[in-house]
Amino acid sequence: MAKAYDVPADVLISRLASLLKSENIGKPDWASYVKTGSHAVRPPQEKEWWYTRCASIFRKIYLHGPIGVNDLRIDYGGSKAVGYAFSHHRDAGGAIIRNAIQELEKLGYVEKVQGKGRVVTHAGMKKLDRLASDILDELAVQNPLLKIYS
Image 1 (tube, rainbow, N blue to C red):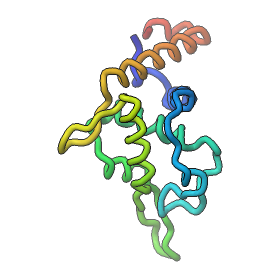
Image 2: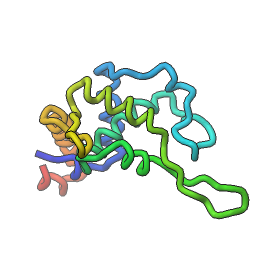
Image 3: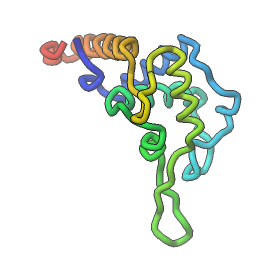
Image 4: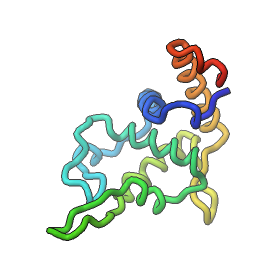
């Protein structure tokens, strides 16, 4: 069985985002007009960015868990130019990450480990691994050399 490590991240995140959307993961009312952090100039241009961010956070927790909100804020942050000086790193907004994690917890895919952060539950691992196996099988049809990994 393939793991999330074995498939390209962009394919996995896009498929997982559509899966989370079909499972009715909650999207906040403010998600359509909020910036993702102080480093961003405008809100995201993609209409379904919330589901993509939830899927990306789900994958990051799977790969690096236990991981906390502050670590994720650093990962999703960016650089902001300050006048003519060098750019400085700014963390991403915490509310977006917290709300995404809370929605994943409601679905039962993520749980909190006291004092350490969030980890993926057994049900979450099962969902990601099955999705990764499906993606790897589809990629193996295009490239037969990938069959050794499935």
